[in-house]
Each structure stands twice: as C-alpha cells, then as structure tokens.
Image (cartoon, rainbow, N blue to C red):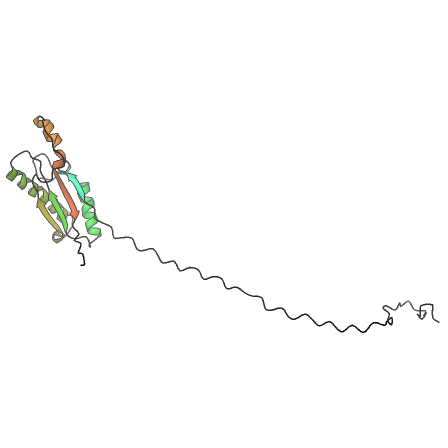
Length: 187
C-alpha cells in the first residue's frame, strides 16, 4: 500500500532517504576538478654574506723606552743599581719576539762636566744597559750601544744653584732603548 507521497508502507521501520524529482532543467554537466596547485615555491635561503676574516693584528711594536739615569745609575756613575725591573721587562720582550732586531741603546748625559767626559759617561751607561740585556739572554748581535753625550737635551735649566741645577737637569741624564726600523720607499 502506498501513501499519498508515493512511499510504500511496510511493516519494517526503514525510512527511504533521498528522492528523485523530475525537472525540465538540462542536466548539469559534472564540475571539473580544480587544476592542481603548482608546487609551493620553496625559497632558498639567501646565502650568508661572505665576511672576510679580520686582518691579523700587526706584530707587536717594540716601543721606545726611556729610563732616567737616576733610576739606572748613581749620579756621575755608569754602574747599574739593582734591581732593574724595566730592563728585565725589555729583556723578556726581546726574548719573546726574535723578530725584533736592530735595537739601539743610547746613553745621554747632562751638560755638567766637560764634553769629552760626558761623551764617555754616556757611552759607558749605554754599554752597561746593553751588557745587562745580554746577561739576561738577549743576543748581543741584536743590540747596538751608542753614547751621545750632551746631545738632544730634554730640558734647559738656567740660573740655578748647583744642587738645584743637578736636579733640574735630571731628564737629560737618560738611556733610551728602541727598535730601529728602516722603511724603503719604492719609486
């Protein structure tokens, strides 16, 4: 038996699902599947910029060291007083870097006394410092000692009594230790 909607009644409890209704519309063509998506664009990471390593630091430069004769010697003397920590430091620096060559040790005197005497005193002081460095292990071939007497004064003192003059002229009594570098210019 059928009901008014065209369904068959049955004693079972199944309900038909879906129905077909005729229409005058033309059949809908099947929908074409969407075109496949292009593969995702994988962006290559930008190459890291090539950073040049920093240039190596310049080799340590042996600086000029000036020591007053007062810290090295007694007045009017070329005998080194002890201890000599600055000279020990210079010897250690020279021992640590064999590329440091052509080291000049230059002694100076003040203007008190004769020129000849002061020249000899400055030479003896420079030689005493060179000999000390050699005794500490520095190759003597790397060192040259010079005396310059009263040349290149650091101070000029006038109108002083002898004791004050000796004290005032102290910077002129000195020994300088420095590496000599020769630059050759290409024409």
